[in-house]
Image (cartoon, rainbow, N blue to C red; front, side):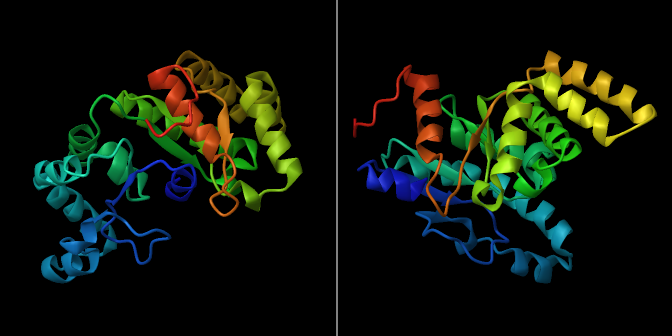
Length: 234
């Protein structure tokens, strides 16, 4: 997203909020690792990786006000926040919710990344829809589902997933073919719940290596906040 915006002459600020990231495919304008390292938290508190992530999330929440002041000084129209990949940290802990609410404000959109390897089968796709619905329930912010790393999938896989996203009945039929017995009835009840909360939203197919789908993400954000798809610097 940072590269794509740059090619369009649009400025953005990138922020890494993952203290455990070993390497990053971009140069962040603000990097939490400058003062909060997962390895150092493990050593200082005698914790394993999971415990250190929880402790780091709490430490981050304690300083989130200062981080917001730093970001406000950039004066950029777009801020991209890269959060830890562990969903239980991002979605289910009070500290992480405080971080998101403090840093984002009202003009924010969540991007939920669907794992392409899981999304290839009906049960995996449905499981991710459940997680997506849970995240939206927790944060009550506009959200889009993005099928990330789509370049790893075959055209057949993409066609199947697209069909499921466009037609929930097709997804239900595929899920029933995958499972038998009591699981079928469970699927029916599950689909009713997902339909009620509007979880069957279409996804955006994206690939960072090919820069595919990035403009669709930009357009979705513009449509939500500005009612258009204008690619201008202002």
